[in-house]
Structure formats: C-alpha cells, structure tokens
Length: 362
Image (tube, rainbow, N blue to C red; front, side, top):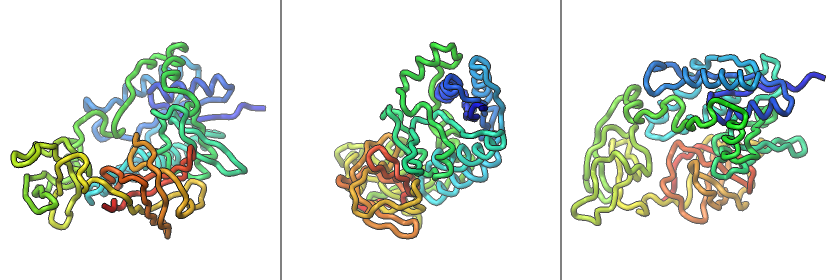
C-alpha cells in the first residue's frame, strides 16, 4: 500500500522545516511547497522571499524530499490584501494572517496540493486537530506560549479534515533542537515577525504607499483639542507610540493612548493613562461569526475568549447570536477592544471559532 502523501507548506523557516522532517520520519510521502504570496516590492530590503526560498530548497535537499515553488500573489492580492486595505480605509484594524490562513494556506494551497495527489496538507502552525465522532476539533498547542489556534479560527470542517499540525504536541525549544540535530541549515534562523507582506519595515510608511493621508485633529472625550493626526487609517485603538503629543503639562504626564475614531468628523479620540475607563470594555459586538463545528456555541454558557493574539483567555459568555452577529460579555473588562480584529472563543482547549469585532461596549 502506498504511503499517504502530505504536501507541506515550507516557508524557509525552522517550524515548517521540522514539520516536513517529522512527517518524512513517520513514513509519509512528503512534498514541499514554497508559496510566494507577495511581489509588489520583491527587491526591497524588507522582502526576504528569495532567501526564504533558498532556505526551503536547502532543507528539502537535506531531508530528501522534492519541493516546488508556486505563486499565489494574485490570489493573495485579490482575497487578502484588498480586504486589508479596505478595512484600514474604513478605520478598522484587520488581521490579514487570519484571512491568509482561510483564503490562501487552506484554500488556494489546499486546492493546489490536492491536484498534486495529496491526502493531506501540513503547516508549521502550533495547533492540534482531533477527530471526535466524525467531527474535527481545532485544539490549542501544547506550547501555550506559541499557540496559534487564534489565527486558524476561520477554518471549517472540510479544511481541518485535510490538515496536519505536527508541531502541536511539542515545544518550540524542541523544534530548534530537532532542526540542529538533523543538520537543517536554518536551525538558528530568526522567526519572522509582523504581517507577512510588510516584514520588518515601518508600518505607517508601508501603508502610506497605498492609502491617502487625511490629516485631522486629536481630541479628548471631554472636548479638548490636544494635537493633530495624519489620517485615521494610520492609528489603532490602544496605540501609544507615534502620537506625537507626549504627556500634557497640565496633567499627570501619563502617556496618551488612542481610545476611538470619529470617522464623521475625522477626529482621533485620545486619553491619558493605560487604564483610562474609555479603554476598558465589559462587552463587545462582532460580525461575520464563524463556528468550526458548523454549530453555534450555547448562549449563556461559560467560555473564554481572546480579543487579540497573545492575550490570556478571558472568561466570558455569549449573550446574543443571530445571523452571523454575536455579542459577548466578559467577567472582567478587556483592554483596547479593536474593531476589525478577531474575537476568538474557546471551550477549554477547543477553539470554537470567532467573529470580527464590530465595537467594544464601554
């Protein structure tokens, strides 16, 4: 009987490299696939795709698996980047990595892998999949500090049934050790950070190449004008850096934070102090809810949720559910709940799904 074929998304990083290695060791027929998702400024100092491809090819050679490169730049631009820009233009703060997983890695890439005769695809995400009575569950990773189930909250049953996450049961420190032990050239390569197509470059500089600046004024909730902004698209709720107003002379000198955006008046609403009441939200409303099982969670049941990645789980209850819209109330107020970001709901270790935050309720 032929070995099960698994196509592994190889980025050139250590996580996806060890994913391919582990599957090869387990006896799978492994094929590597390097995805090129961005080419607008491929020759810039911030774009590392050429080096990433070389690293992926080097690892594939060491492991002894074939690898091919595929260009998804058009799909990425159409399905992810255009939505990213329109959300920023509307004053929200989207999470393109979540959309990339749903539209590129587990759609365009999955479709391509199936054409290569794959039984499954695998990625270097830190998460786990479990099948219970024919139902596929998305679980948190064993390494809580690396868990990436938050970014996978929009996957469905069909996608999860074809997905493997070999790193879900091991620690990140073990991953680097495995890579070094097996002579993988990228065992000490720095993890990529930030949004994939922006890389390490200054975010505001990148965005200004695509969105117009519309300067306006900064105001406090009490109606005092305290400064000027370059355009509401370039700020996010909870932002502290880059406001250019420092601590007020007539106040405590505490730092300023973005609390809200008045799109109609083109005003940025700012407050002083990390724990200002305008930054604390006991509840939120969210749109475009997606539930991994296909069934909505129970209203009023005790769950936990994250309103941003790396946040600790916050005990909550869903108070309203209708036609993709939901409302969630927290036991403790949440800081800087941001429109456009995802609220992801958990039942213990199980990721139930999530929704796009419409607004926090102060």
